[in-house]
Figure 1 (cartoon, one colour):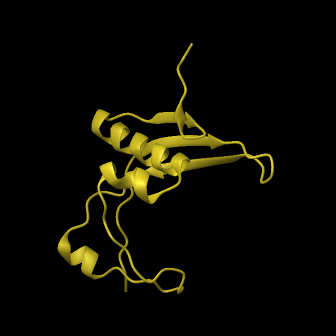
Figure 2: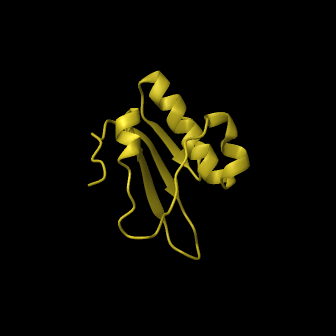
Figure 3: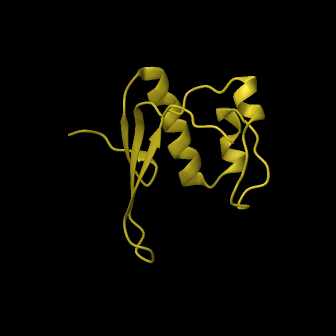
Amino acid sequence: MGIQPVIGRLLVVDWAPLPQEGDKVLFVFDGGTLDHEATRRITFSDGELSVYEFRSVAELDDLLTERLARRLKAAAIAHEMGETIYLEHGRAVLAG
């Protein structure tokens, strides 16, 4: 059964050029807030994952690679500001 959350607005676009893998453009969208009933219905049908947990933005540096932590922290800021943030390698690019 699982869940099918409504996907909201685009929070982050992150250009990640990697010479060994090729350029990537990564997108982070607002997935909304899951209530207790929705989290109870989360399933993993393909066997790739077996567990999930929710963690605070403050914990990201200790859990993720530096670039991924930067991307998700930018998404949290974009969510609060009501904007979309453009990144390169997880770092904000100043207009100019």
